[in-house]
Image 1: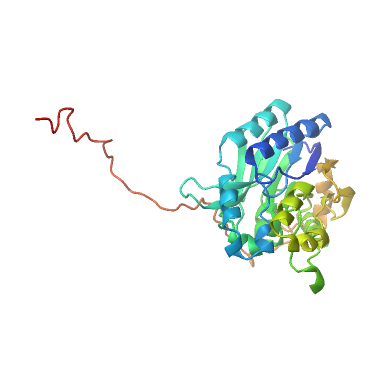
Image 2: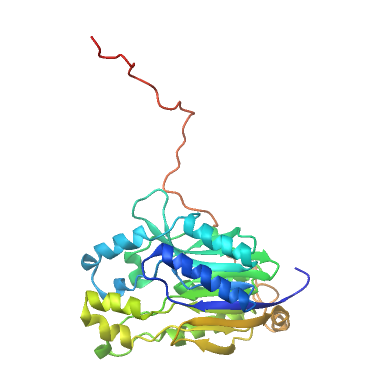
Length: 342
């Protein structure tokens, strides 16, 4: 794009309607409408916003979670599916771009799900569909590994937009793959909490500090803006988990809450962040600010040695099987209407 625009963006620091795909999609529609009324042209939702982040995998052993896995699968969504179409229709109605974190249901398996991110444009069209490359830590008990098909940056009227999910923002090669496609707006999505220890053990993972560090590193290296959008654990989600097992109350209450924030191409945070309460975080990104820092370190331009380093990225969708069939007829009638009659 020849002209570098200024774009107002919104991070929906929001809770889902826990494990209810339809109600969460409807809430997403209302948040898109609200963000659009505030002037946002890009609305970002957290990791696995529809239908929820499966934090229970950190709280209890797998043998206690079979029913929750089944419920997660039942509320995961197809791409495309009715929930996606509802959200895409709102994006078109409001003329905004939407980045949506979902738990995606496989079309070829009754129990396979992926942690996915969708970028929908202002005409309601799907621009990019990314499945998280590697589920992180306890997420491996819920989601299958994704593939490289979605490691793409979308060239749009509001800038070149890329996205990675949660711990993928720790993967230098995944991040570089997006940098090498002229990324200007980087979307970084996260869960509402990330429990790693019981309170008495101390030293719980500080996801706010970690996420700020990762966002600053990517923005500084890419010379791009980063939208950090984290989920929010509301009272309904907390009570659901505590009602199931009261012993996890301290873990949930004392684990640091994730935060949503904006980071500029120098790695500095822009404005305030949202952490302790639900809300829509907005800010204006002037993409012209991505240019000057490229003079200092352009890791996909002059500040690299392409004769020394080489990165190959396979952007193919994995398939469960490849069937090489000849054309076959449809159902063949075998019984006449009067077959078997005396």
